[in-house]
Image (cartoon, rainbow, N blue to C red; front, side, top):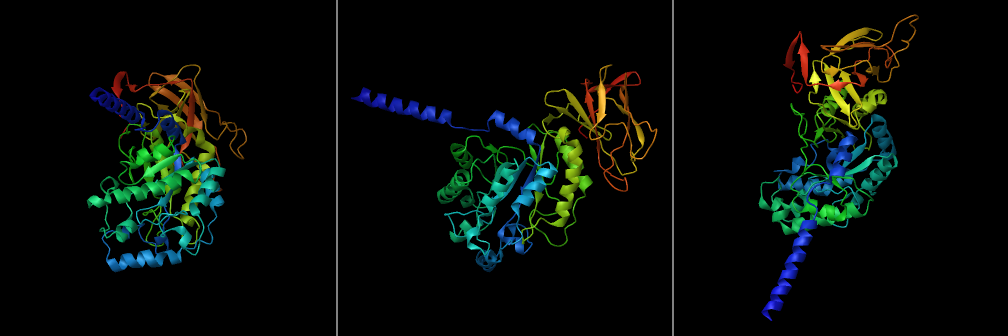
Length: 452
């Protein structure tokens, strides 16, 4: 009898061990590679407090009970984005070169932007009364853009309803692993998001993900989980390249949600240069929009995206399916290399429109490029034959291999602005050349650190 009992226990132990070993514990490598090649995405922060223009959700942290009650009871009544046109958002994102989107389905406030059965604090109980998550996912999916869910495990509305002080990771009950009720609540919400909206490509868990990431993979094993498993710095780019994969998250102004006043925005040139730097360092760039309460994208943010779109229209091949090189920068040149190592891209970042003017020839020495007679250099978006209205003008590219590196003489001839003062980076595409970390300087060997 004892032998039979022991045998049963042994079989149960084996089955449990097999189940544990089969449980997914990290992103699938092939899916990580896929994610890295996407390169550039749109973050969308939208919440019930957008009508106030307050910091998204965080005004609740430490707020008075009176403030919290007003927030939860009154703000849904103001949510009615009558000018919301998700197809226009998706077309703008695609034009800008964004290959994926991440939408705040539930931020820390606990307001659900989808038709959920888990709580009455959701989009269906607003004057708008439609499933915004479904509308967005359908529109972006139609444009071939990968779909990402932002999800906060912390839930201020849940805390409020259960008499838990509203804060961020300051009470054991803020952690799903230490709060079975919260864990069950979050799992039921993730089940809806990962079951009712087709294939979800990316999950951004903004909070403690223990127990939730494993559950999410049990529903959709192909998910790439970014925050919670990857470095996802906000509003900063590391000085040194981080181990891949990683993702930099930035706003265009100073806030994630809509901020109607006191919000200076970056220029299009700044955002383009950030995209170049992040890709040169091996990261993805997740650029945020904060929609207005009426459902429109703020004009300042639309304008930035359209300038990025113009630059990307000419230079997109240097942004996707590329990897960092051992030295990522020298002076005003940033470098990437195509995944198949056939091409090296050198981004010539300019300090102003007068730094390499339209129609002007510029000589450059790329000290990290080892060229040969078969090396070919071209300018993305410009065929180097003619410059507008100039007759008999030599616009050809000249390149020559030297001991000091690849010497390139090229003309900036792509006209993007009427006044010909386009200030953004020009990209050189280099074929049949090798990259070297060590460079020759006047007969001596030295190394240049590109991660400055």
